Amino acid sequence: MKLLEGKTAIVTGAARGIGKAIAMRFAAEGCNIAFTDLVIDENGKATEQEIEALGVKAKGYASNAASFEATHQVVEEIVKDFGRIDILVNNAGITKDGLMMRMTEQQWDAVINVNLKSAFNFVHACTPVMMKQKSGSIINMSSVVGVSGNAGQTNYSASKAGMIGLAKSIAKELGSRGIRANAIAPGFIETEMTHALTEEQRAKWAEAIPLRRGGSPDEVAKVCVFLASDLSSYVSGQVINVCGGMNT
Figure 1 (cartoon, rainbow, N blue to C red):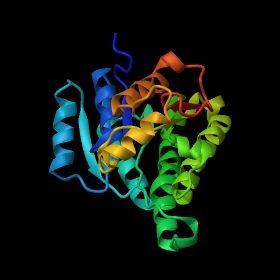
Figure 2 (figure 1 turned 45 degrees about the vertical axis):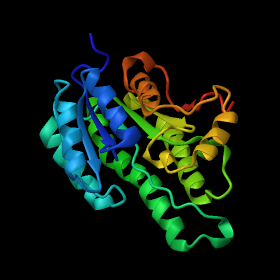
Figure 3 (figure 1 turned 120 degrees about the horizontal axis):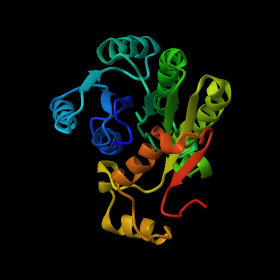
Figure 4 (figure 1 turned 30 degrees about the vertical axis):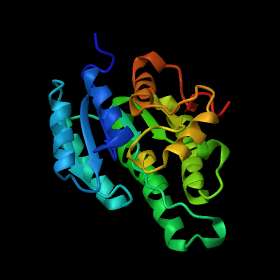
């Protein structure tokens, strides 16, 4: 028996990177996948086909996660197409790094809107569906910098810390309705974003990690499977660091 057989998940920002790895790993466990991204281009279409090849239903939706209205519309569409929502993974995110002294209001607003407000939008739209079902698992993708902060990333850190507070509060509000909410805090994960760094920068990162290497998107996805499935039926309101021991 596959761990997510017959369930339906929404994964935001899943056309590439960690989001795509989560969608693929969920699909391998028998989960139907609705994923959203700002645009569903050739890349998004290819992701849709890759997921479908695993024998589940998959559909990509072009939607601006930072828009309250657009999010409610897309969730309505997803419920029409799939019939239910069992799992929500709030993964959509951007960075616009800079020191506090030089950070513009636009840099701050953009990151808070895409990273944190989008999570609020999707939780707001999905919880009535989950409440009717009396079950659901919400997973917020936070970050180690949301747990411990990072110089030059005040906007990103604040947005990711907000996602932890959101998950913990939802866990308390909706636990009586059978809905669980947790956060995952990935550390240094090898994605397109990190490939922009020099070898020297990456080696320096690895030195600070007890496991002496970056993680893979699939290693984050496997923890997501645990939180999405009944393996974690009594786990709610928690933050799991997936960071190779960087944050202890």
